[in-house]
Image (cartoon, rainbow, N blue to C red; front, side, top):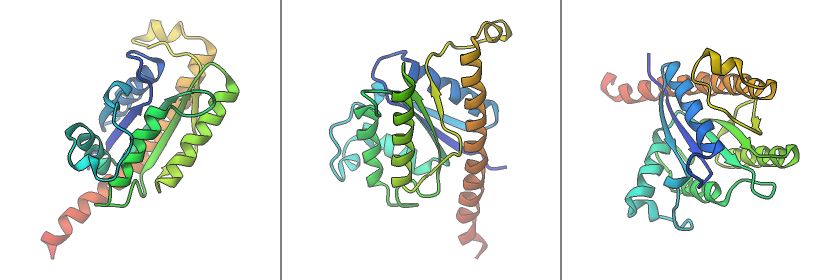
Length: 202
């Protein structure tokens, strides 16, 4: 079985933010289900404003773009800044323009979208923007998107039992969203492996 490669991106610059913790939680769940997972936190996304070709000369940006080139699935986690995604995350995603092989942009890649915030209206509009941007990058947002107002890391049965109903619901939705990402990503991983083997078979 080919192992799907999942890239998770947090759009918050604050170390240990809710967005970061959600991204790491999702990464652990992906790995528990047999996937490879790489988290990019906001602290790793302090790129200059997008300029075409900069990823070819900047090692840090190049690593990010190459990770997305190899990604079979992506999870985007953004804080709600004034009713939309963080500028940090949007600027990082603009570098997807530099991906032209093995596909254009994120064509055919499943993207799970998570909006983190304090208010329902802001989270809803942020989630909509994440899905819109994903479509523009030729990706496939999963049928389920998730909003999270608060997030406590669950490290065992006792911690899970202590979660509020709201937090439990967010985790249940997150698990469904990740299943959707991994299901589509597994197909991508298998297809990519078959394409790599095709020349040798010929």
